Length: 266
Image (cartoon, rainbow, N blue to C red; front, side, top):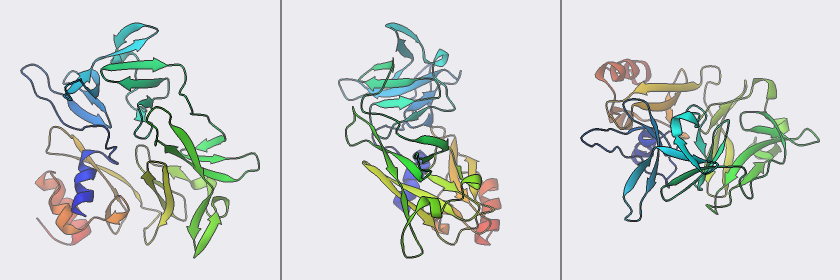
């Protein structure tokens, strides 16, 4: 659990290929947002990379049609995400390719082809109405592919997602591996070739949500946990009190959560 907590503090789900350190200099501080995306005190955006000496660098410009432009003018901060642990990333407007210290808008991503109809979140359907969960196969960093799951382990056997998921109430929580409908909370366990999609048992679906807590660490301004009316969660496990007590959050926030979830006062 301690290792899980450490990973959770860096990002909601850590992509190990991208570093999450803060760099301080005489004039600039880089603040972590998510994955390999940072900003400075003036809210200018940067993409983290490495130079030839394996030192972390921060890219401030993106190449668009052979022209360098400030990343702020192109990248959508709210929807930006990496495609697994590949060199590619996307936002709602563009696709990007990162290699060494070059961050470039690309017209298309090799190997990446959408095969099915998006419903919402990470939920898709085929032509026959069968439900699918979309994942990223990033075994080749230059050739990300979509993988789709059509079944889930439920009531002791593999069942079609269409027989388990309630489409109308299904929702995926942004920048996380959690989703839920009116009946269940689901978790996508990420792997290089995609992942596993399963139900988290004994969770109160009605009150399940993501909680954002201000951190005491400058490098990571916020900590993201999952919660219901009974417990706090990290990844697919309940956050135990010992790990919770190590969270770098204010005494006030810790006290409120401890009273509610652990029946103790800090």
